[in-house]
Image 1 (cartoon, rainbow, N blue to C red):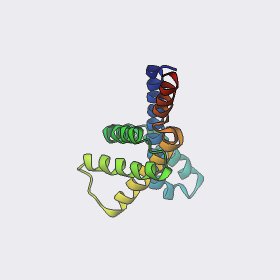
Image 2 (image 1 turned 180 degrees about the vertical axis):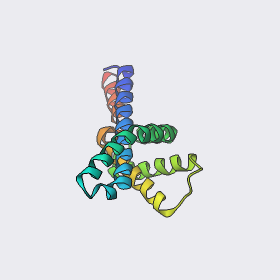
Image 3 (image 1 turned 120 degrees about the vertical axis):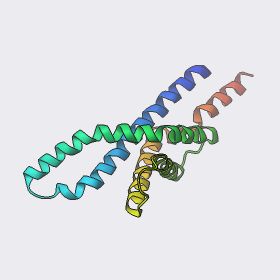
Image 4 (image 1 turned 30 degrees about the vertical axis):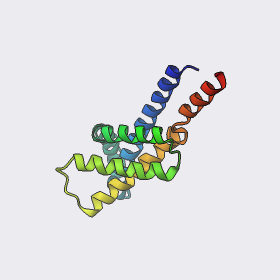
Length: 151
């Protein structure tokens, strides 16, 4: 496999991991926000289920918008350093979420909001690790090994 194709495939995997991480973190936030209200009579549960379903794309859009730049920076760092541990990616997800919250500076930094955002970042980082993080930098190792064998 050529270097170019390897980089393109890795970029696609990183993009899929980022999208899945944003969806998981957004869903996690919505479950925390709406989850307590989803217990009750069936009619209320149905209406709140619709509300969660309708608000999920909006939360995903905003989370993706604010987490894009720090998420890309984290992905580049993970790829260059070839860090493949779950803890690194979970903590990195928390850092990305914290930076995204700081970018959105109109939100008051209350402890409850901060904890929800950090937990959602850990969920997003874990999902990213499951898709793209476990093999971070591995394609570079494979290309280096195959180049040294050809020499």
